Length: 197
Image 1 (cartoon, rainbow, N blue to C red):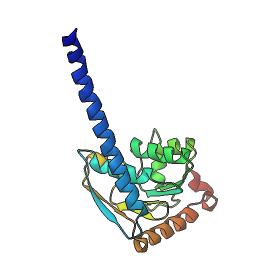
Image 2: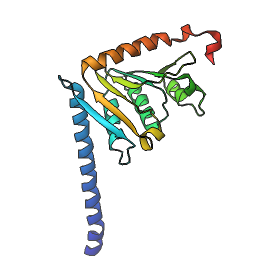
Image 3: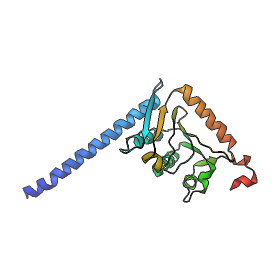
Image 4: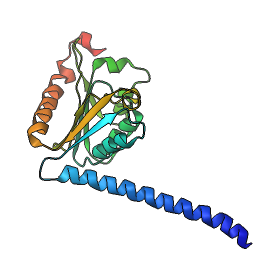
């Protein structure tokens, strides 16, 4: 009886300790990210991909999950399910989520854009033959996520990519302005009838 108790209690204690450690590390990283977003001075982080250990995708995810009021995303390609689920989760928490993407993303099947729309997220796309090739997001109007990374599995786990996360208002401001310009330009009322496909 005593031997079987040890046989069960040691692995159970190890599992409990591991779980507590993982929760602590997650909590600590979330706190660091929230401090970055709420800092009065400018703060920056640089992330590189591919992300074999998934550390940088977690950093990106934590930054996006810190959105309280708004999350404006302007990316050429968005099909990474984890990042899409973060946008959907933010929308469900009451965060105003807006997405701008390239018109070529509308024809992908199954359509990531349609998944976002079905979940109530506003998505707009360019209405001309040129690429909407930006890759940035603005969190709560004060934190910029910008770099070469498309929001795809291939970009996160295979491509050589980068992201800079910054709270420098001199940098964040122009990106927020550009988002607003594109949001208005890509309003569906501005499409010609032949552009609606």
